[in-house]
Structure formats: structure tokens, C-alpha cells
Image (cartoon, rainbow, N blue to C red):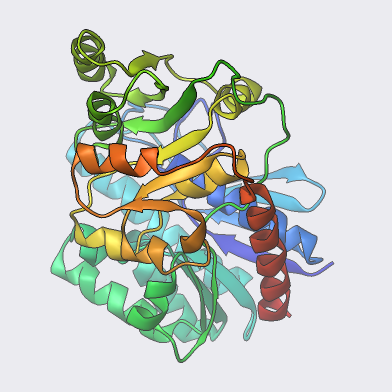
Length: 377
């Protein structure tokens, strides 16, 4: 069976020596790996991810290859813990050099490889491609220079790697026109996973709302959700689960619950089947992050797909990349960045009407697998 190499910052859950990675990125990589297997290829994940800065003075962990299942293996670069700025720089440079030499040694001319775009690894990818002439399928979740510029040098590298990529996996339709509509590309908004039905919405004549995810003041999704309760009546109950700035959120929840008819319940962090059951007991999922920020033009909120795969209806802020997507007609949007507008959008949803969101996600999954097969062959 032919092997597809897939490069990105990847780490195993509960690793004793945590590496730099994002759970959302790892989850999407896992979905794409499964899709690669489904179209008849084995997948080899290559992670140049160095140890997280929280790991201090850890003995060197040598480069290792782990067989995760019959059709998927993972190679992790050698790395070590650091306790000062100088050794941290050494750790990063070592990982990038390792990736370059690994590509030169292991990838053949015209071989198709997938790379999860990151400014950090752009240089070794660009240099290795110039030498080995492999076919680069670049997975682009967002344009990093639009979000936060690490340095003008990295911005130039980002433009360069967009130019040399042979084809793309884009996270939104808007990225096609911004980066590469003249090259082969596939749109993949996120994970098209449909969860097993483990629970049903609570039947207590209430409409149960859900915000699940990171709790922070930057994107403010959870904070916007709780503020919207002030404009909802006793027909609604708002459930919050997640992690982050919980202390600040709980203070505000207690204040709102004293005056709001819509009560708010915070239930901490859940995972696995407990998470699925909790979410499926609700009717409507809320994607209520702030609407300002250039990153919103191209960064597709993965939360929306997660809610749909759980069978929930969705209320979302009216960002262009979602409104113009294939699922834009299946979401209720609000267009003013106010908590009152969120509440008004929630009120528009009639939970007694048919909900086809699970079938929509299944269709997106089938379409992606079909398109991926054509791209990889």
C-alpha cells in the first residue's frame, strides 16, 4: 500500500514530555489521516514539534517512530527540555534542521506530501522542495500574517511557500481566492465527524443552549454567550463547558443568574462519551466569538462542525467564511457584535422543525474523501 507523508506539529495525548502542538490541529490531522486511509493509502505523520517550554531539563528524547495502527505511524523529532532562552533557540533550530535533512533523505522526486502550514517550518520545506522537487500539498488553516506577524521575515516565507505549493487543502472558500485559485485545491472546513447518538435533548419544555470550548477574553465566545442570557426568558437554559479563564466567567455567571430569567449552568471540562452525552442533551450550539479581527476572514470556526456532528442546531456570528460556505444556509447568523443580537438569533430557531445537520456533515465527509482520492492519485 502506498504511503503518504504528512508533516505537522503533532503530539500524542498525555505525553510525558509535552510537545508544541494545538489540540484543534491534532484533531484535524487525525481526521485527514483517517481519510487518507479510507482512500487506500497508509499515512506517515512526521512531527518536527519540539518540547514545550514548560518541560525543564528533561533528558534528550531521541527521534522515534511509533506504529499507531496498521495504516498510520508517527515519527517524532529528537528534543529536550530547556530552562533558558539560549537552549530554547537551540532546541528549535535543531528541529528545523532535522526536518530539512529528513526530507532530503526520505522524500523522492515528484512524491506527493502533505504539509500542515506553519511559519516555523516554511524554510526547511521551501529549501527541501527546491532540492528534491517533491509535490507539495499545503494544508492552510489561516494566513498567519493576517493573525499575528511573528516577524517580517516569516511573512515573506509564508508568501513564498504559498507560491511554490503545487496544490492546497484550504479551511475556507475565501482562502481559495486569496491564495491560489489557479491551483488544484480542496476545501475542508474541519473535522466531518458524526458522533454516535448517546443521548437526546432534555425534554422539560425548555430550550437548552450550549457553549463548549475555550474560555478566554480574547475571542470572548463564552463571555458573549453568558451575556446573551440577559435578553432571554425562562424558556431557555444555557450550559457552559470548557477550560481557561473559568474564575472570571463564574463571577459573571453568578451575577447574571441573580437577575436573568434564563439560567446559566457551568459544568467544567468533559471529554469522551461524557462530552458527547452532555452536548447531545442540548438543542442549540453557540459559536459566539468576537466578530472583529482579520483572521475571521479566512479562519473557519471548527466549533460549528463539532456542534453539527453532534446533531445540534447552530447560532454563529456572521463571518464571511462561514456565510459563504456550503453550510451557510444551515446556520442561524447574527450580524451585530452585541449580546442582544445573539439572543435575537437564538429566538429565531424553532426546535420542533426537522434538523438535518448530521446528514449534512456526512455528505461533506463523502465529498472530501472523493476529492482527496483524486488529489493523491
